[in-house]
Image (tube, rainbow, N blue to C red; front, side, top):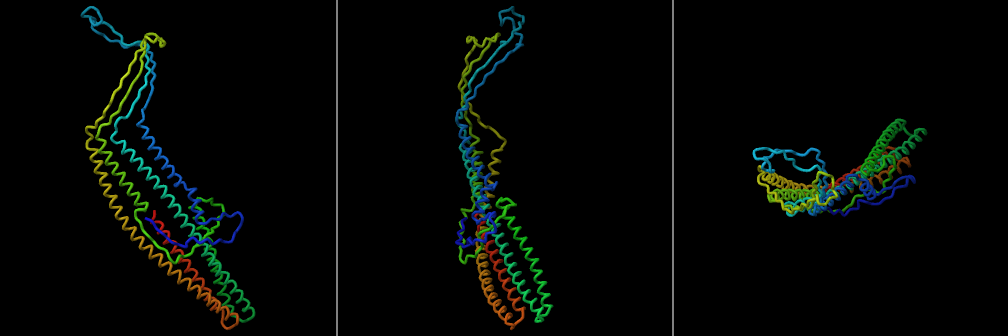
Length: 434
């Protein structure tokens, strides 16, 4: 299945450089780095190369197989038997000892074997080609999975950093507000209880800032894990997250990798059934033999008169007659497996369609939440400016300033939550491709 997201997701917003030794990554660079250092992806490429080599290896089985033999023997004790004497010109009614063979014997030969007919060869080659297609599909799967995992970890780290920045912004504003109240308390213009309450809020926000900072470090460590990036090396994120106000989700089930895998499994089962049927046919092999044998009671191998030639050419056919019903049972098992795969494919298609509709609704909900949060932020900024103006001119106390500040931070948090929901929906949509 194919998804076309017309997004503004990857907006390049450079952050301030923190040092010359930092490694800065955009999300595309992070994905590329992960692909270059992904062991599963490298192994899937090797599996594809292995499949190609196995097809070539099977093809070479149809080339003549030539082997040579050399045999040299010394027989210190020859085989002895008793035969009727008349067989060797002796007195009838008696037995004579007869020895077979010679003390020295040798054989030099060349044997050539050639396949003539193999009913399952073509199907074996098709099966290996299917394995090659599956290996290529696995490589594509690992590439997309690595991309998806890195993108998810990258934007999780980005959002964690934005949450920390939001907390730091509130902490700085609380610090300034506490300083102003402290000055008024010293001048006798404000109640010390107010300063005490504000100090407690400031300390709570300090603790929250520490927690958010640790969450950011944890998210960054998770990104390094997905990228296979050295844990001790500093890493800087360049991209940010922005919500696209218009995107579409289009579904093509035939492009889904899981459905392609099911299709390959169906083809493999059909191939197995065909091989079981074809294996009932005979296999035919040709064989040619050319050699020379030496027999003598003396090791005079140089004496060519003691060498005797031997050669033959033959065909061998092997016909399976009875296997106890094993092939028939195997065919029935594969037929049942194919039925399971068809059911799985139909159910998977329905699930993908439902998931696609749900993700489209989640995207729309996230966009609405983001719009509301941005409107709330704008209102909170205006209220904060008005509260600060009234507070500075002595027309109001610090509480409206504090409330407006809290409202602004809360609106920022809602926007971050909407961004997180938006990214989650996008990643789920990307997952439909896999």
